[in-house]
Length: 138
Image (tube, rainbow, N blue to C red; front, side, top):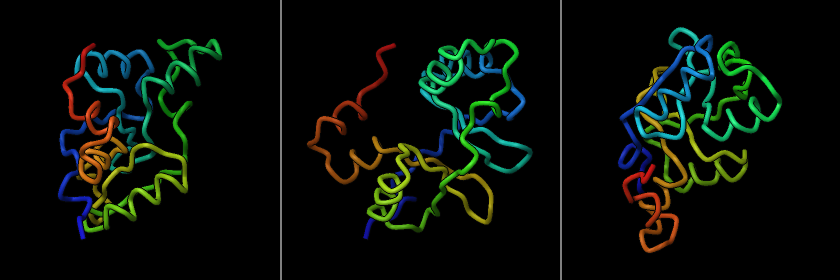
């Protein structure tokens, strides 16, 4: 059995739920990532992606400079443990229609597993694994 902890990402970027969409977009740009984990104190309250900013905020004419992340963050966060089976994590993604799962240990954020991470681990010859393993080009 392959566990989530064997291949999860530990290079995490977190932002407070009160931070603005502009701040999140700038952080994503500067860190060459497509998502930030949204927190409220020590609690993980969601994940915001570059697509969320575009579709949930900009397309709805929200002001990115004043709109807090909490306004577009989905409130029901699905999480896993580093000891969970990779197949079970993939099943959770499928069931809940998500592409990223925060990894918690004793309620504390320790990692993130994405659909790309799973592809690289479980199907290394797949197109998704190939794309996910490449360095970002933007």
